[in-house]
Length: 381
Image (cartoon, rainbow, N blue to C red; front, side):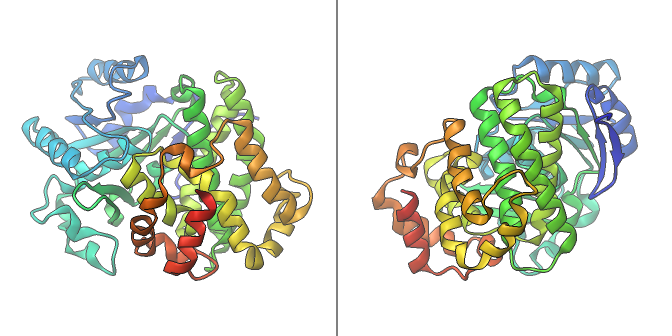
C-alpha cells in the first residue's frame, strides 16, 4: 500500500515522502511570490531547513527566514516576526516546524495587516470577526514533527508574556491554504521530541474521543488516530528512519487536530498553564497529565473506551487502556510526575486559575471546577 495521497480535509494536503520538492508549486497555488519562512530557533540551522531554503531559492522565491521563535511562542516573538515580514516586503508565510513554528508563522500571516492588538482576537465568542479578513496573508504549512497538527488548524496558541497565560487566537482564514506533509522531514527528530510530539497527537485523539459533544466524523477520526499512534509511535521512537512509521505518525498528528474540533478537555486545560509558567514541552506535559485525567473522567468515559480498546490494540477495556497509557509513557521515558518537570506545589493556585479559564475546559466530559482541578494537579504532581 502506497503511503501517499492528495487530501482536502480539512484543507489541501500534499502527503508523502519527498514532497517538500513541491513547495514552489504550493506557493504558486497560494499566490505567494515572496514568502517568509517562519521556524523556531532550534530548527533554523538544521540541514532540513537549509535544504528547504535551497528549494525556495532555486525557484526564485528567495530564502528569507525568521527564526526568533521560543518553544512556547509569545507576542514578543510575534511582533518581531511581523516586523521582519513587513521589512522584507513579503506576501505570504511558509510556517515550518513543530507547533511553535507553525503557530507563530500562522499568526505572522494573520497579524501583518491588522491594526488591533493580538489579544483582541482571542477565541472568545465572535471576537474573530473583529479582524480584517481581507489582509490576512496566505499560509503554506510544513510540519517537521508529528504531534500538534497545527498545520490543519484555524488557530494558534500564543503565550501572553506578561500574564503567563496561553491564549488561543482563532480565525477561519488562519487555516493554511496548502499543507506539505513530508515524513522525511521528521526523520532527524531526536527520541524525546518523537515521544513528546507523538503523545501530543495521542492526547488530542483521546480527548476528542472523550468529549461529550456530538461530532461522529471527529469521533471516527480520533479512534483511528489512536490506533495509528499505538501501532507506530514505538516504531518511530525505536528507529527514527522507519519512514512508514513516520508517515503514519504524521497522519495521526493531522487527524488529532482535525478530531479536536469536537473538543479537548482537562489534559489540555492543565497543560496550557503549566507550559506558560514553566516552559515545559507541551506534548510531554500532556502525557504526564493523562493518567490522572483518565482516572478522573472514568465514570463517564469507561463505556466508550471499553468499545474502543480492542480496536486500537489494547486488551482489557477501559481498565486495560488506563494501564496501557502509563506503560506507554514509561516505555518512552516520560516523567511520571509533574514535579519531575519542575512544577511546584506552591504554583498550584496559579495553575488552577489558568486552567479554569482555558477554552479546553468546555470539552471535558465531567464539568471542571477550581476544586476538582486542584485535585487533578495534586494527583499529577
